[in-house]
Image 1 (cartoon, rainbow, N blue to C red):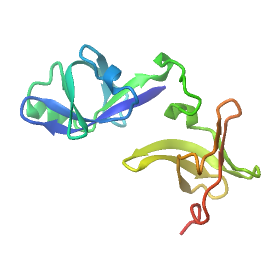
Image 2 (tube, one colour):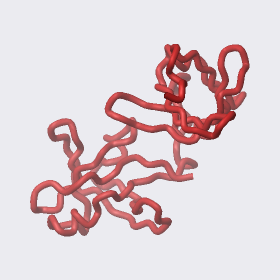
Image 3 (spheres, one colour):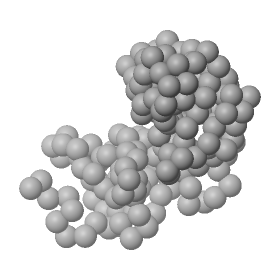
Image 4 (cartoon, rainbow, N blue to C red):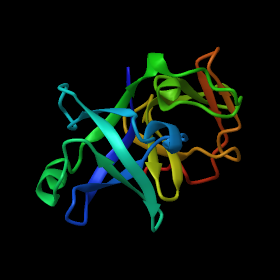
Amino acid sequence: MELVVGRVAKSHGVRGELVVDVRTDEPDVRFAPGATLHARMPKSSATRDYTVKSAREHSGRLLVFVDGIDDRTAADALRGTLFVVDSDSLPPSQDDDAFYDHELEGLRVEFTDGTVVGTVTEVLHSAAGELLSVRAADDGRELLIPFVTAIVPTVSLADGLVVITPPEGLLDPE
């Protein structure tokens, strides 16, 4: 399974530098000079490899130079490109409270009393934090649940289960 570690947001400057939205806890490893990035456009299965020439932080964003992209036009053509890794190549997490997105997708979501809420379909990363996108068991609608300990006190990969204690109104359709 592929995991997204970054997305090209836009070009920066005229020399082909890419602004990358980071989606990994290890940007220093994934975007280190000499690292190979597997790139694909959204909704495409074709990949292309790029080698990182340099990476630096600028105003809270990661700027990356890759081999073969030497001007603004080439960089602009990569807008929206996803940098991905194979989940099988990842080491197991050393933190009991840290999860890869693919580990959460497909887990059953329940209230503390055992009532089934739905299934995690995706983990969304926003500026405000992570959200679990859950397909409701009763009507199939999408529920967005903040992935914070106060609302998601229990995640059991072994049991395939996420237990939630949402505040009143969070799951209301309106």
